[in-house]
Image 1 (cartoon, rainbow, N blue to C red):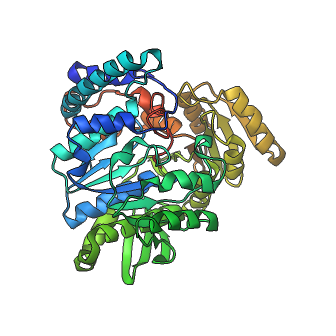
Image 2 (cartoon, rainbow, N blue to C red):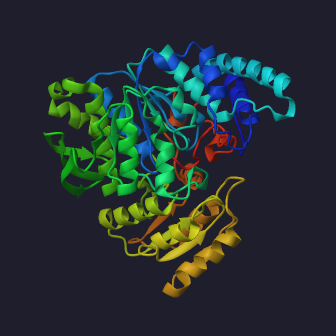
Length: 482
């Protein structure tokens, strides 16, 4: 992946990219030492720590928007990014500037290089340098402390127990919906849950999505071990009403006995309503009795401010192009349901690409109810599944249904081909990976983050971390930010 930048910011991008791909190292030794050298900045503010198979990024952004509406200064850390690495670190819902990013990187990278040298001297060829994800995590935690935020809202990269973000001691630990995704986390939902509940710490207020019985038992045991009683979406925080409207949905919810009406969420799909319930439960847990004093209109303001690029996002009309970063069967099923509910398209031309470690057949099968024509392409990553192999799987899924499958060399070519055959009543749906969505979004429309203040504003500053290369070792799911 090309890195383009100028000055100190460009040098920071080059240095991060040079940390390169790596294997999974299941320990917190490097990140613990690194934040220790920084003075353990993660303890300077309260934290909401969010994990789960799907919905982490949406939940994190909703928590931050709600807390900002309440009047608290938030710092947000998400991964991966769609276009620019600065999207990962936000204060007050705005990304870090290029200048400040470079300054923070200089400070943290200097310490990391010192650690790398010590490790090389001690362990020789067996040494593990600080990874891309560990470095950006330390940068985020330090920057939030420098900015004197009231609350850090932190998204887990991969799993939970060994994730680099797990140096925080969560005031609120949020466990989103748990399902199968990465084989390194386990072969059953229960094994995956065992990794994710590792973010629950003594003193944590625990919030969980509705889970399968086996996962529920694991969450309850982990919570009981720290004398916490989980707040469960669907039991303690419930959806009383949901009405799709233009640009999103209108919700009525009950948050532990408090009814909130007329919440206008500018996101589509029942899965986003469930993510909002998690966020409301997290905010209620963080604020405690103070939550009752927050005016309903303030909560409505926070809900209306939630913005999440790449999630059933319409980036073009005439023809309509919809982007969604669904990257596993569970997420794709939610996407297909939401698409059918929110739109009335005649035909949907699907542009699909994914990474090699995904359940490709399961994802494509979940798209079958909505796809009228399929164009497969390569995800822009060294881990992208080759289009020829992808076409073979897609033909097996869609051929018996009479749906035509063809191949395009790259995302831009696939999108252009799809839009060229799309009628006025049709739509193009781009999905399968955050990397594919990011490339399509760049091709079709400028992004808000790329219009941020600073000398590098408007520049194409993609970094290798967008597709998770160099991040897996430190604990990041390259498609996690959904």
